[in-house]
Length: 69
Image 1 (cartoon, rainbow, N blue to C red):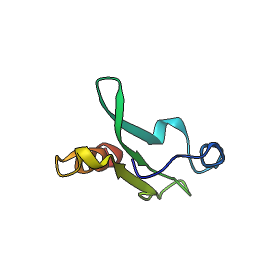
Image 2: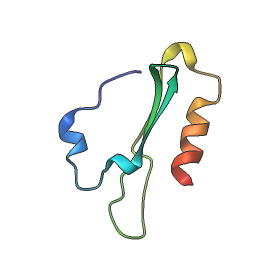
Image 3: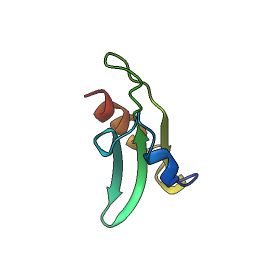
Image 4: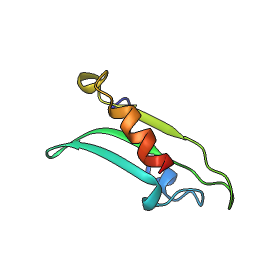
């Protein structure tokens, strides 16, 4: 992926483990989507990233659909 998720970001009150999805290829994380929820009736895509070798394979789209679900 293009960066690291800092621990401080996980402590953000808008985030929780239930709103972070990670795509895996066996034991290797290859994609991530983070869905902050700033209020009871709102959410937004805070970050989506896919490891370079896995781009163009629909992983980001699948992660975004999962976060919408």
